[in-house]
Length: 426
Ligand code: ATP
Ligand code: MG
Image (cartoon, rainbow, N blue to C red; front, top):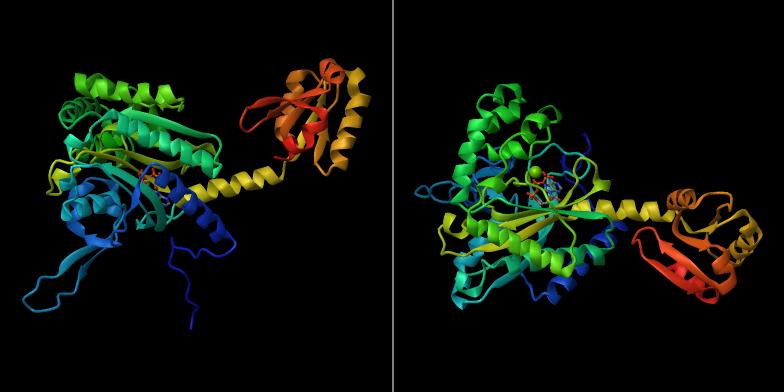
């Protein structure tokens, strides 16, 4: 008999890796608690209609990625029900919000979830058929302030805090506004018109999207089509005054708390329910699957699946990709020396060797540069070899105060020579 293996696109998570998974989940729970979110757990499978209506028939997820089956009818009189393993969790949360009449509290519901999702995609690094998401939603009646751009900015600020606390360095936030349900049809019409004469030049997938769902053409990664896509109309030119003001308010609040971001006019995201703010946090270390998390506002979703008006905003973070990033960072970190000692001038070489000797005898891993290098070269070499650089020039020699720069955070501090070992060990 042939041996049985885990199904393609699924995998076992074993110790010691599961420790990292627990660290990520515990950190997320702790941060969500500080922002006063509570946990929700919805079923792993739902009525297929929930996703067909909520996520959208024309999306890649619903049209080709769902695990759907006809559940056997229990009695002759009963009809078989079409069920689907959840490909995402927002639709399930909104269904639960409606089913339990959470809107009647008159308060915002702030809910987070952690759990497996299922999509039949081509398995590759960072892409699995059973994967895990950590997500959160802020949803409620308009009277509770659920439409306010402050909620968008607060969610984004929370995410920046969470990634920082997880120790993920080098993340990048992109945001955009896809407008309200009123703006969208005008934009889609303009896209269709612009795509008409050029779509036959595009890849097969984009030719199909140009017909069925032209917005999807914008997030295509097909290299041959980028030139055409760059020339398509921009959604920013189709936003009405209130969507524009909403987006400007989100940006202003992010600026006020110092969360860095860039506006990407092509960011439309793969789910139909998004309105106004959309966003993605990416990480360069992930390669082609570079999105750590994505999200946005979904002001009409509740009504689409038969509920009351309940605007909301949320995100879903790919836990598998977070773990990959953390593992890559840890591997990168362990290959680096603790410090690169950079003498600034050849005359300082002997004294720099003495400093390196002290640091090494204290147990630190140290690279010693050369006073013959120019400062720029010292920084370049140091960045490749060590986590921190120690600048050792005439001034430092005289004053006994050393300048230490951390390459990952960019932070630069002055430290008395006697106190330097613990600073470099951090
Ligand atoms: P992608 O562009 O990578 O396909 P997506 O737009 O389909 O992502 P969402 O549906 O917004 O992603 O899901 C949010 C996050 O979940 C993604 O940013 C990613 O980190 C993660 N994710 C999505 N699909 C998978 C998958 N098949 N395997 C692992 N993680 C995934
Ligand atoms: Mg996808």
